[in-house]
Length: 380
Ligand SMILES: *[C@@H]1O[C@H](CO)[C@@H](O)[C@H](O)[C@H]1NC(C)=O
Image (cartoon, rainbow, N blue to C red):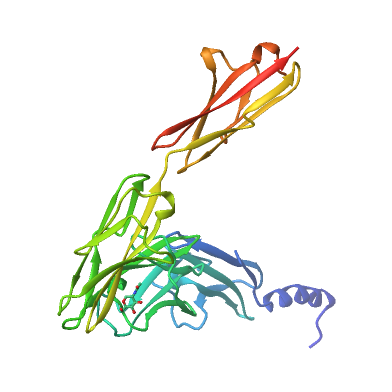
């Protein structure tokens, strides 16, 4: 049968349209949300012969997640309160009489770190036995993992292997007992998990314990540190100082170490050592000696001509923080336009003859204060 030219033109329009497979796109093509937030993916139809059926599918999965809902026409896929497990690829499949096409969107779900410590603890370990504990953390973005001891800011030495971070003890010592904290941190948050290590002594093995692990003392005062030890036969207790001899003004009696009139150089770590035939056990006390300020002026005598600049610096030894206050003798005011700084400087850009006299700096910390003076002579 021959078609008339008019029929041919009609068919070239209608036939091509009725024969066109759907052309679609998804929006957004990639999206990141936080856990708990809701998000929608849209499937947009550009062209294609109607009717067009739309359907959302998840890559490598027979079904959509429970919290994912599609609208009545199938074009919008909404995740209500998204979950970490929703992360993945979602494909919109469009089909009509002429064929089918698809477009894919990628959903990423961020969530704060989740931490798991194994064994969960408390760990009961005998002195001298090995022990280990591993911390694993998940989260998006991937968290950093670190371990520390409760009551201490020091990071512990740990072994790392992809996503896990562990502490190992080749042989547990009594002083290893305590609470250890695994911390996982990312931009989404910080999560801590604690695990306790309980060290069990074998029969008779010495276990040393100090009454305080950290102390601060004011210079010139005396200090006592006491140490007790269990074990059988009763252990001998000795005291020593880390990397230094004990201060010469010390005495030891019945596990108690007394230091009389401590000085700054006596700061440090003191070690109690309890020894018997089964072995030994160490316990530590960290002691810091605090000192009042000792102030000096630099220079302590200045000669200047009127119009010149004056600069004095007050220096002080002692426990920080130290505050500095400048003043003048006989209640005279500091020169007009003088400047002082937190670190003890006094500065006057142009001195006058009347600025001559005695300048006093008082340096103060929480223990005490100290005064230093500078004499200033100014000639016309
Ligand atoms: C504690 O005593 C043991 C055994 O006598 C010794 O090996 C160890 O070095 C001592 N520790 C310190 C800190 O003195």
